[in-house]
Length: 422
Image (cartoon, rainbow, N blue to C red; front, side, top):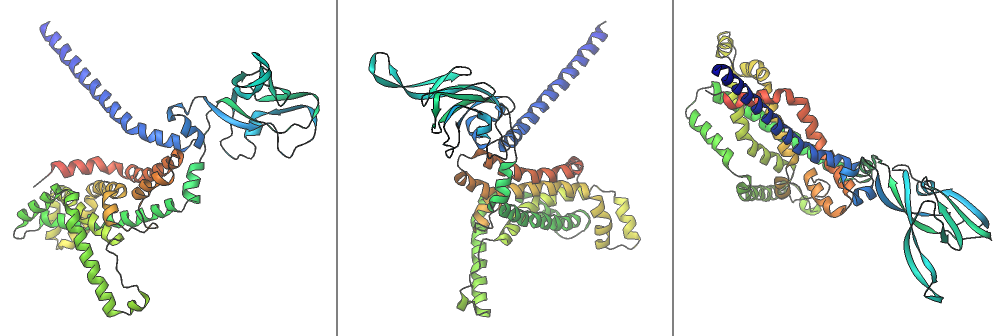
């Protein structure tokens, strides 16, 4: 009996632990997914909706105010009764985000006789609901929740158009207008996308290429001071990026000054005033990201490569294969998981980097990378949340595609590079 109870208690404890893990994992996923969902939802809403209500109201009817005119200004024909539809008036000339729903009320603003002083009038503001008549320019105006309205006078009158404020329980509506505006009507976002690709692709390929050669050397080649040199490379991972900014900036400024002098000495650039070589450029970002990314890349790839079957490499060496042949024909194909996992790390880091690009990248407005462009859009778009969120979603989509396309290698390569060693 006691043994059966112990087994049941143990099984119950395992189940509770497993349930707790699932709850924690679901909570983490929720925290990560919710901001992205909010960005996408807001970017697909109209400017009015994004300003007046939160994204959590986007999928349910929301009461919003809209101003409409009873008829066009050029329509001056006298009439006794006019009929129309509020939604048709509001959607006239619209290609997207058409307003649909139920009209709840109309705000009446006007002067009416003062019951306390019959000789005077007073200004009132009140909500008129569907089916209730209201006095508009001396005529009786009645509307229905469907948006249909009639405007009736006692005799034919050429009434001027009247603008009224209607409160509508508006149905959810989405559209790609924000994406069209930031991608096709605003050149800054496409330029920033191109600049980010110009920076990110070389800044990912260069360090992973150098690190692959270095990792093979640390894993399978014998040379004096190999272990101490590897320890030095690994210790560079603890150096904060911010600490290296000053010497890096001084180094690039010195190189730019030397290049400017060399350019003036070898060419006639002084006549055209083109001698100046910029210290901040795409090349400076490539070098900086390569330097900051190499220690982690070498560490991960070396720990992965050193765990590959030793017999395979010895067989290739017996067959007369050189180090270069072993590296290109055996090590690279077998190291795809580790290479892919680091590529994801490096791509995400460089693509989302703001501080390095801000201090070391080009300052020309046409060459700004996406994170800096997003930061500047806070002042450009101000309260236009739908445009800001559309830009943010575009910046997220690219690394998301990269991660999803290489995710099958990610965990395998990351774990192998973390636990294997020699």
